[in-house]
Length: 344
Figure 1 (tube, rainbow, N blue to C red):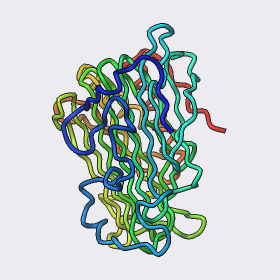
Figure 2 (cartoon, one colour):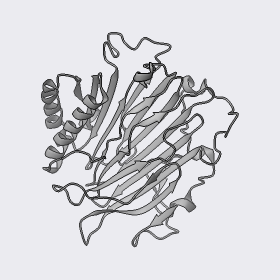
Figure 3 (cartoon, helix red, strand yellow):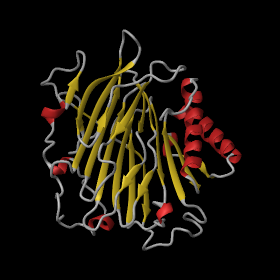
């Protein structure tokens, strides 16, 4: 499904944001500018050897077949007449869907809230998902998911998800999904490309739990590999971060990894250099008041932002601190409140 609103670029004026490679996002006439029938469009071009080791043909629906590739493209801008951030272009391919933007925050009535949903209930072996989100013209956006991302049990192949985010000058975005739950024998590779203007802000978080603990599946997955790359508006790399969890090969419950904890969280805050010190100091001061969460904040290279790494034993504890970090960033950057995420 492709939806386009307002007077955007001409349909023949297809441009690309960011550095030139085959994963870049065209900024106009999206469905005509891409080959969304080609499995390569959904697949990261640098799948690690640790994940490729599980490559195999599927006995049921094979990789690339209908229902095995999910796609979501959103382009949002600030409406000059109302000041609200609106969806200007939307293209989706089941099992990734979104509904209309909502406006839930009294302190930021111009901010759009988007919920990413999937009718499939989770990610299966051989699935390849791709999410492209562009913010322009002072857009303000909060993105979350309808619930946890479940990575189902696999006996052949693996699953991947690629998320490409572009935050233009003077835009603000929060991407705060629920936790990832890797089931027994699952294999998952996620690549995150964060392209953020030096005069813009992005808060991106991830939470990984040990599995379905109530079914005695703690740390029974094969691999959960998370790669994050951030670039500025010129395509220059700002930082890279890898989280590689292979509990069957390595004991994660050791000093220097998870120790006695079960849940790991990461928050990437990419913002103007003048905000970095204040955010880092406040995050480190605040975490001391969270008895069930340990971790800390570090300033990224070139004062381009802050990374926060968290450990705990319950996803809700980590999520609670993620929300606290969002409150800090909003207060420092926007001088606004954060009342939480509404799900019911």
